[in-house]
Amino acid sequence: MKNIIYILLSFFLFLGVSGFAQEENLDKYPEPVGGIEEMVKNLDYPASAKDSGIEGKVFVRVIIDETGTVTETSILKSVSEDCDKAAMDAIKKTKFTPGIKDNKPVKSEVTIPIMFKLS
Image (cartoon, rainbow, N blue to C red; front, side, top):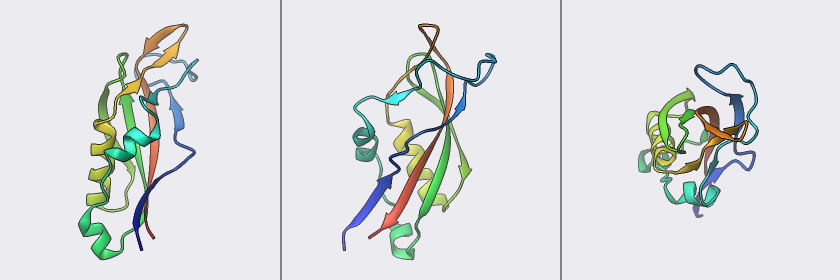
């Protein structure tokens, strides 16, 4: 069967604005430029995980700056070291639109769930 990497359709679980601002909601949350498909292009299922039959959902905490650049990633929920690294690498390679608050781009924090599934 073909190996498939799924990125959840419920793409973002928002944690709100990070850092210095105390706002809990943005007017518009960051989105990957080119859509989820662009992130999928950057995502590789690690051979070690495939060979070991490892599947699961990695949750990555992501800080996106005012220009839409990913400035920081960290793992909130791990599947395996290799899957975690693959998820973070794919996110770091992806350009985002910035979060918007009061018609201005702002630094924001989102959690991105990425599902690794063999089928």
